[in-house]
Length: 541
Image 1 (cartoon, one colour):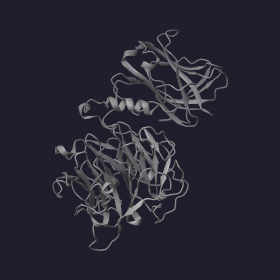
Image 2 (tube, one colour):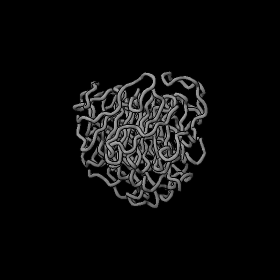
Image 3 (tube, helix red, strand yellow):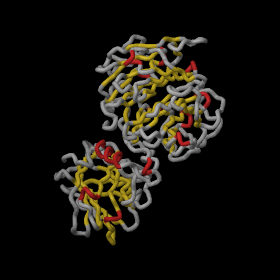
Image 4 (cartoon, helix red, strand yellow):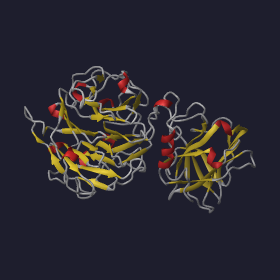
């Protein structure tokens, strides 16, 4: 079957709510047919109590077509008004070799069929399918929903369907949309293995997205940086097309030569496409200038001095990097308790710091907004500090996020102050999006906190990721490994349209959230921006 503009192997999951049933939605099947729905299947053997596999709950629907054009068909009487709903959503587990089916509705038991919408489901994995009613003809009335064989031949392999629902017309992504839409390093959201290939990770620690949209991931245990050409368009489990720090995608050893890395924990890209990598255990930064090529050498700056009285060009475990639109570079020099700032180092060919923000406690994250305001993770003190335009004002912090420290260092995985919206347990990386929203990876609370408009004076987080909406839990892998859970979050990054990316260190993956928070004009309306929704449709093609 051909690829649809709306739907193919990867579906429109995320344009509408991805997991929970929202107000206005109608459940059709969840462990059993909902009241009012009956089985009208034809040329098919159907079981509504299949125990394995299931997407959620205790049962799914097992379907075996017994003839060409057989169908899993579900009927309701009296018919529903089509105007009350915007889409059909279900999960499908394809049979051996994959399953080709089509979706349509009928206005009556025997007629009024809409157009037939093709769906191709990969075999052996659950795939979410969202079919907007507009693409099948915007039916005015729905009496039957059918998932029919699309091969036109007998012998279609057994497949499985679960969690069928109609999405209410008013439904849109909630605030926040804390369910990840895509994943790198794993082929699905339930896996967490590590390896050394072009499509796998082993402890991702830091992320960066260049102005071209290219994504860079510091792969800590593999001593390398992997890169994908476009952060907005990769599909689950896609392979990287560029590696820095190794000669190829299957090498993973450490080293101190200029084409090797040892436990990189920071990466950023300046406006000219120069890639800066914090080569943490080599106590230096490597700069890779375009054109980029796998295995290329970088230009180093900085040297090791983990003793007292270091100079500004001596590091002790450089951890994080950031850049601003002018090409200035910001470096968290962890064990010297400072953030170093370099004015356009590549353009000026001057890699001596111009400014230092001193007095921090083992900072492990830094970010800068479009106006030059700097955010620094004061990690040992369990807080984030903000500095108003330090390059043009002063080096005194102006705002604090995080209420009180537990007095425990970041090498002890605990939160002695309990979990609330204002307690942090070793904040690591930071990111600021184009509208000024701040994202903080809260390491030992296993969550990401979002502060909307943080410079307005409100130090309360507005959203949480990884804890199923709760600000008072800090469970690793809450609810099991899924698109909603995280464990030991490190790097965070944002793209130009507000998409959020997270290095989920313990699960050896990068999670991508397409439209996690609404634009300022849409906050409180339950919707993501139109630009983000249109981008999501393009990403899902």
